[in-house]
Length: 106
Image 1: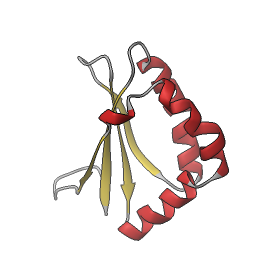
Image 2: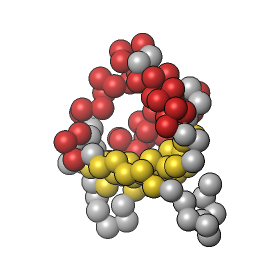
Image 3: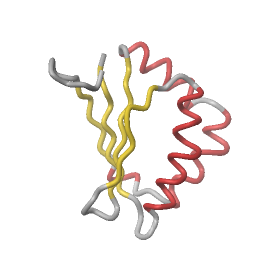
Image 4: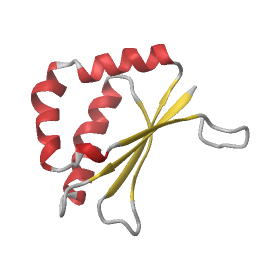
């Protein structure tokens, strides 16, 4: 099992719009496809910071879920086209992390 910690930077003045889009559209859509979203966060001191985490059981699980989400007509035609108006895609940082023995997140 591992987590994907995704750090995004929103365009000026777009963080609240992005947060709403994530929590009302993107996260529910991905969860409906089987993704496990472990958390959604905004920076307390950085006005453009948004972070979220997803959990995967294995690399095969991640590949299957990525295909289900990112190759779906809904993602391609409806969801993805709105992202560039809110997010600076060039500043995305994705980290794979594994919980330590004392982690309560599993």
